[in-house]
Length: 330
Image 1 (cartoon, helix red, strand yellow):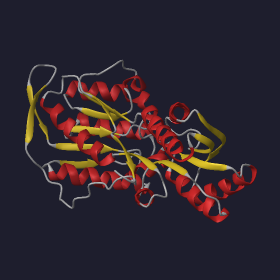
Image 2 (spheres, rainbow, N blue to C red; image 1 turned 180 degrees about the vertical axis):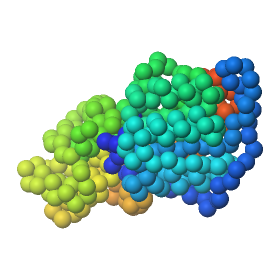
Image 3 (spheres, rainbow, N blue to C red; image 1 turned 135 degrees about the vertical axis):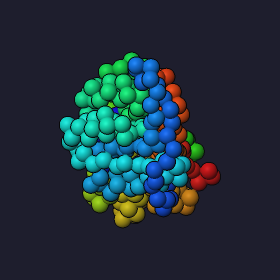
Image 4 (spheres, one colour; image 1 turned 90 degrees about the vertical axis):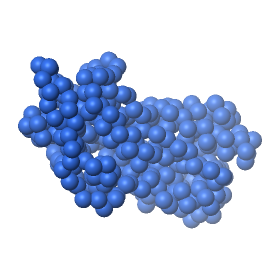
């Protein structure tokens, strides 16, 4: 993504519902510090204090994420300082610069509102020996490859779309010999990774079921409107038997629309995988759900920052948010 920007916030909220966050009710507390070197060669003590800067704390999804970070980091003996830039890129860099420059930060985890605006802050953190973990790929921040003291963490939208398309192709091959008409329910325009996701999903479906045809594409904004739009689409294409949904609203809306129309839906695949979707997978109503494993990503992100604190001048990592495909048999 840029993994977590304002425009794809709705996709983030869906993704956060995919797996339970770590919400351990541990109290944050001050703790030991780690010695590290500055540019001048002197030694300073980096506190075990993590600064977490999301896009905003207003959306429930991001508030929950901040609580999850607090719980996990606290269980590892770290104090967590949560900032709230409220979607203001200038405010975000100012808040972060203040706490990093003051020496209070031992590491920072940033869901950047505007990656291109972070260059000076990144230089400051590097000069102070404070490791950073930021959302997105290096090129979104003006870099090429791994960088000293910075770890990049992103969603692989191409792999996500490919997994979704492959599962629908597999279902259609099993149930209709790889033929049939498909309704594609995409995410809203402006959603991060949309083009890569949509292209990969369509290509993977074609490769897995060459005789399957996407006859109509709709945007699934929310479950109720998706169900209405799908019902209307079925009037023009009554022989649609498969649905590929880029979010949970689309997948669940499709089940409702086909049920209301009294039509059989052979195959549904879904990207998101909230609790209701996963239950429908277990019950055989949805063939497969592709889900971001954000709990695992939270752990790998924090654990990486801890390792980086021991040697903040070494190149950081380039992490990918883990994916998992759920089927009735998995």
